[in-house]
Image (cartoon, rainbow, N blue to C red):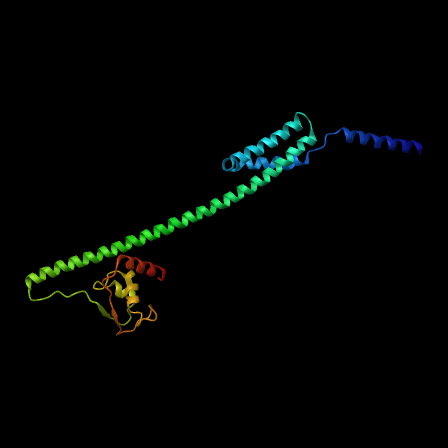
Length: 230
């Protein structure tokens, strides 16, 4: 019994000596190393070069203390500092990427809005050009007619229109003698709001005023309104 007790004491003392002689594992190194490696593979170095260089220098200083001088305690201080810097840098990288993503979405939206505005402007310019071409053609035709019949006066563009059964504002606007463009129907709608409660419901026999002297901006606004309410 006494011999067994002595053997147990010897084994306990041996374990204590071995534990004292063995080098402790750096817990902060195991946390800092993968995070530093992850930031190196990402865009941290390009986005925050000074901060990433400072982080790398701190971690490498800890590595030198750990592997060369074998000063585990001093190395752990640098590993802990490197881990804290890495966490902060990781947070900044995430914020920067989110900010860049938002800015990219804004640029895409701005480009889309600009493209839509340019398209509307071109469409309005085309509509204006068509109207001028029609007016020029009509004027030329009237001029030829007047030469043949000097006493006859050319019929002017109609300033009013009587609705027929089943007609809609776009159909009226698309008529050659009106605008020859179905997207300009909001001009008629705005000029006859006292008669039109619902632009999609017209009544036969209604007499609408047809605006003629509208500006280019009004044409652009009419086309934009028409596109939104198709």
